[in-house]
Image 1 (spheres, rainbow, N blue to C red):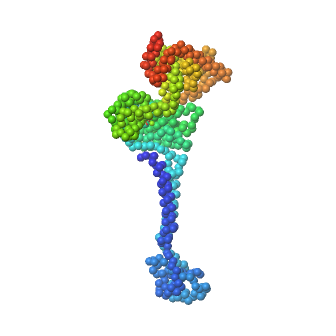
Image 2 (cartoon, rainbow, N blue to C red):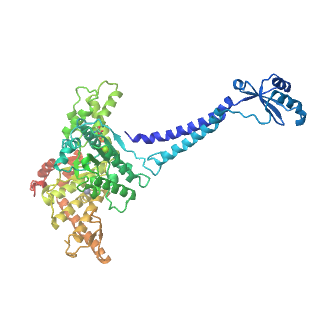
Image 3 (cartoon, protein in one colour):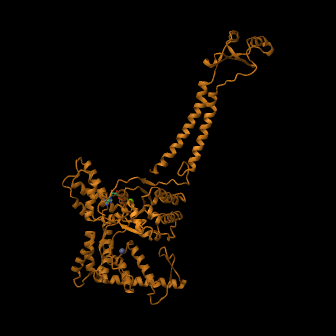
Length: 620
Ligand code: ADP
Ligand code: MG
Ligand code: ZN
């Protein structure tokens, strides 16, 4: 049932038809006439007269050049006999004519071959074949996805009757699986839900880093529910021809409705579902596709048993309209596996790999924090390849450990190779953020500090503990945030007496915050209780433009600069006063590359015994 194949099949069919047409024409016009057409045999005039005298002739054709004789046994021989006209004058041939008359032979009309079969083959068959050829082309041009239909839908909808994957193939991810169990149940007995009047979510959004098994999980849901699986990748939507994306979406939902109950899976939905308010990269095609998707999702009746699952690793850029209730209102987090999850995943993938008894997945898992399911699968395969290269029968722990280095370390450095000096700078930068946080707010700053560069391009980050959700923030808190943001750059300047480009994101956020203090929150003394900023698209995002005179605009700019500069000065002072602590923490981070919140707390209390930190999530 894969419509994927149609496209591949179609152009050869077109070629086959053309070849067939040529073959038929060659046979009809060249070969068959050679075989079937009557032959002409030259004979002498005397032989000709002899044949007439012997009553062998059935008909004779006389013209100014030659005589042609059709013998009585023509049917068997298929041969005419011809001889030159030896008389210059027709009248001189009267002797011959009277002989013909005497024998009762007709000679006043040409001999017509009455080979109907031949005529049929030569004229009728090629005509029929040619007409048929054009009919076929015409038809397929009008058909969807047919030959030469560029503007039409050549959709690559990938459909599987059964995916063959089950939850047993997905290790770890217990929470995500639990969230999906309900969907499976719904697909199996929709009646149970509709009877009570319950509406099931139309769509679930799988969110998580690449390689954590989102695609796998969607297939497993289809496999568990034993329903067909239709999938389409977001990036395929956005292609060259305008209007294709929208028609693909239509096609996908039409097919799904025909095959309900089933699962529709849209991979990389961020490629189409990007927030529409970004006017710089606005893309009509994508917007059309997105609108089509939205309207299809609203239009279909979920009680029929079609469930849409989408996957993304960039949920933050998705258009708000996609996330509202009735669309992808369920968000299922598929996170990187923890220690136990990693062991489980390796067990799943090692099933078909021969392993020495010394292989210890616990040890491997401990060495691979942050590895995704795909990484772990890759590690096992790499280890197996190494074992083969080494001429071994089984994979041993040694190959596994080498494979970690190749897969994980290779991946981390693939994008950015950090020099030692750079690593030291990043260590100071991140420690700066963390230390400023602790000194200002007396809380544990972090859940984790890392200086391992990520594929996303960040060189390191401080992962803040989720604070208690706050609806209101005081001006003091906002300013503290800005000081923390400037802490990274301040730390670099203190230690190295120079600054790097690494702080651009901090600067952006600090500036934005300072701008909001003035223009949106009315917290600046000199600007007062006035809104200076207009939201552009209230319902779609929060892009804003300043809503004030040129003069005020430049004053605001000056004020922003003053606020941020003050904060930066504060950060410099704080870090300068605790330089020894900064140095000590930075060197530990440089060594270990990762620091957990607990490790940070312990180090900090040793270095600064007078300050007691509390955990940020303790509600301080
Ligand atoms: P994503 O769609 O999240 O980027 P995939 O589902 O394509 O990731 O995962 C890629 C491969 O990694 C899968 O085919 C599977 O072999 C392996 N994998 C990832 N996560 C898991 C997991 N939790 N359990 C087992 N295998 C996994
Ligand atoms: Mg995927
Ligand atoms: Zn920073």
